[in-house]
Amino acid sequence: MKKVLALGIIIAMMFALAVPAMALPVVPATAFRADGGITIDGVRDAAYGGDDDFVRVAAPRMHPDNPDENSKTDAATANVWTAWDDSGVYFYLEVYDRTPHHDDFNAESIEIFMDWESGLHDSDEATDEAPFWQIRVSPVDPTELSGYSRDSNGANWSTSEFEDFVEWALIPLNGSYNNGYIVEMKVGVPGWSSVSPGKVVVFDVQVCDNTVGDGRDGQMFLANLGEHDDNNRWNTAGFLSGRLTLGGVYTPPAADEPAADDGAADAGDAAGAGGDDGAAGAGAAARPAPRTGDAGMIALVALMAIAAVGVVVLKRKTN
Image (cartoon, one colour):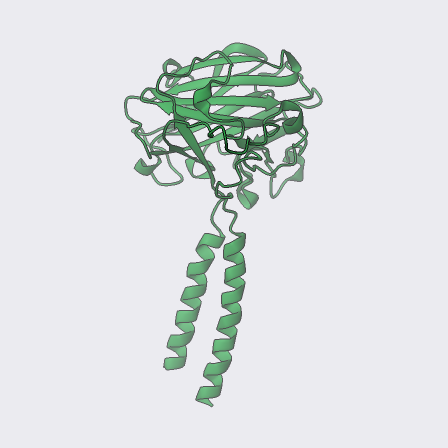
């Protein structure tokens, strides 16, 4: 009986440790409090923070069962700065795209996913009280807004749910679409939600690219989802990787502190970093790394080895 009980405890511990090992990746980000210091004009205001206070959108979607639907690993990427105030959340994106084919709105665009109140529903379902949004803009027509609002009845392919909350500007990067483009967007707080210091908003960003003119063949996100990357995020809030904490006002480094690497956000450098797997900016090394489950898997293997030793010991004691 004692042997059976011991084995049961060991197996339970193995399953408990396996749960974090199988967890989806999470990319942390912090939005600085703007306090009215942002104008939506395509120019990065000081309220967004420093040159290295961004997260990268450079993780290609890789379909686990259909390689033909994989995203190109050298497709367009982006750096994303964020801020917030009592009226909404702000995004400033520098999109690095050296293969512009601006003839297909859906194929050449950025999409911002917003799940304002993830705590009101489980990880897989939206509700009427707390839908989540996919907001799309494109250099094909910088004045057009597209996307959907998803509630318990599924995706409503209309901007009517959120168009009154969104303000944006889209301009060429460094004066030319041959370099990419800049998107600045404010997403206002809907009436069924609220913002406050410390709140965490679930989000993700997708950069869609039409690299050779035959339609979308590049899709970059904040993180790879591994075996779940056949989902595309658009229909399940639980697959959104970003966790945006609403923080305090940005404080620039003191004059006597070492300067951050101001090349981190350089358009040329970032455009050549398409293989960067969703990492934060070069100067953001102090941020927690995205959780991939690798550490949990190592611990699981170690525990299995310990369990094997335990079984041997039990056998010796009972013989």
